Each structure stands twice: as structure tokens, then as C-alpha cells.
Amino acid sequence: MNDVTIYNNFFKSVIDTINSAKYQAYKSVNKFHIGQNYEIGKIIVQNQTKNNWGKSIVDTLSKDINRVIDGATGYSSQNLWRMRQFYLEYKDKPELFELAKNIPWGQNLLILHKIKIDKEKLYYLTATDKLAWSRAVLLNQIKADAYRRYLTDKKVNNFDKTLPVHLSEQANEALKSEYNLDFLGITKPILERELENKLVENIRDLLLELGYGFSFIGNQYKLKLNQKTYLIDLLFYNRVLKCLVAIELKTVEFEPEFAGKMNFYLELLDEQEKLPDDNSSIGIILCPVKDNIEVEFALRPSNKPIGVSEYSLTDKLPDKLKGKVPTSKELKQMLTKAIRNVGDYNK
Image (tube, rainbow, N blue to C red; front, side, top):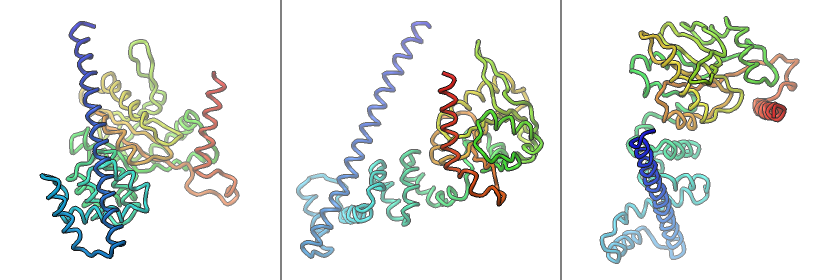
């Protein structure tokens, strides 16, 4: 490593530290600001109730605040009424209020005025915080009814940011929100490698479930970098999209690190296996459960096209198996325990 590279790394670490400190300072100031507005709203409500004051007291308060605190902004009659409404909305909803403290006042007001259902508020508060939505972006998301789409469409990917428009639309259509693997006949906990083997044994049914254009290349497909070997669970080629499609199988709930691993595999595929006429390789992560907001956040730093979908192993149980097969929650707990035991055994 030469001196220039050493210095550039040193410089970058200092800049990253400064930017991180600025961001944390901003978050701290914002929480103070939101908390202050909440407290002002609380004082207004309590004193109106105690002294039987009407609406005019807020106008008087606004004038006196601006007279005493010269040059103060944000204390107009309208904004004081908003603080009052903000307090009334969240005074009995501590979990929502904690989320509200994480986002700016302008975004809070949008959610306050336009969203009436608590579950919907939870979605927009969480998404605004995790995805850093500006006021304009939040407004567009509300107008587009993002919450309803979140409920009805489990399909999450970053194709629109990592692929050309025409290819992004085709890739989005090719990706399903959920894959039905009922044809495997699995009614008990199974490890990832066993699930992979079952899919390979039933490759014809898997290809039908994936949809038109998929051709199977292989499982445990080897990629090498320096002296290390990396294995992709399942590798396909899609004749419509004209690209390699890597599929990673998970038997636990989606975790953010899955996206980083897939991004790495796609980098290797594009470098080592993609032909000159091929489009960028696409990754699909299949897992039994995922949180869409977490997935969206995990995919943000990725520069490779990745989609995350759920799968179901059984569509409808025979009557004789009802009550004997674990629920999805029980299955997840059993799988986690089984994987932990395997890890302990291998130590």
C-alpha cells in the first residue's frame, strides 16, 4: 500500500467520523425539538382545561412568546395549535411517540394531518426514520398509498435503482412476492442444505414455479477469489432477462447481512461468469419471513439488482396432519434451535 493510499484511507476515516458526529448531533437536536413541541402542547392543553380558557389564549400566547423571545420562529398561533394536536395524538401512545421523535417536525405534521389509523402511522413513522424520507418523498409515498401496497405486495427489490428502466420492469414482473414450494411435501423443520437438495431433486417443479424463461445451471455453484471458494445455492439463466440469476435459500427470517453477501456474489458473477452480451446478474433471496421496511433499508447501499421474496412450504395440510405440524412461528423456533445445535456439535 503506497503513501497516497494510506493517507486517503486516513483522510476518509476522519471525514466519516465528522459526518457521523454531525448526524448524531442532528438526531439529538431533532429529538429535543420534537420533545419540546410535545411539552408545549401538553402545557397548553392542561392550562386550557384547568382555567377553562378558550381558543383565543393560543393567539395571546403566540404574541407574547414572540415579544419576549426576540426573533423566535415556529411559535405562530397555527404552530402552537399543531403542538397541541401533536400532544393529544401521542399522549397515550408512547411507542408511536418514541418513533415520532426520530423524524423532523415537518414530516411529523404530514403524518399527523394525513394519516388517521395507528398501524398506518407506525408504517410511515418507521419508514421515514429508516429510509430518511424527506417531506416531499413522504408526501409522495402517502399519495401513492405506500402503506396499502406494503400490506398487499410482499415483493421488495432495488431493480428500479440498479437496472435500466425497461429491464427493471421486466425483472420486477419476473420476481414473485411469494413462491409456493408445496410440491416439496415438507411438513417438518428442514435445514438450508436439505431444502436446496429437495429443490434440485424437484427441479422441474421449481422451474414451473419460478416462471417462464428460467434455465437451471447448477447448485452449490463455485466462484473463486484468490484462494477462497464461494458457493451459490442455486444458479439459473433467464432467457427473457438475458442474465444470470443467483438464488440464496434461507430457513430463517431475513437479516440485513443476507443482502451484503448476495451483492458480493453478484459482483463475482459479473466479473467471472457474465458474457459480454449478458445483462447484469440478478440475485433473489428466498426466506420464510421478512420485514419489508428492513429489506428496503438493507438493499439501499447495494449496487447490484437484488430481490427478496418469501416462500411457503405447505399450502394446505391434509386433515390427518392438522395439529401435528408446527406453526410458522414454531417452525422458525425449531429451525433456529436445530441450527444452533448443529453449530455446537461442530465446535
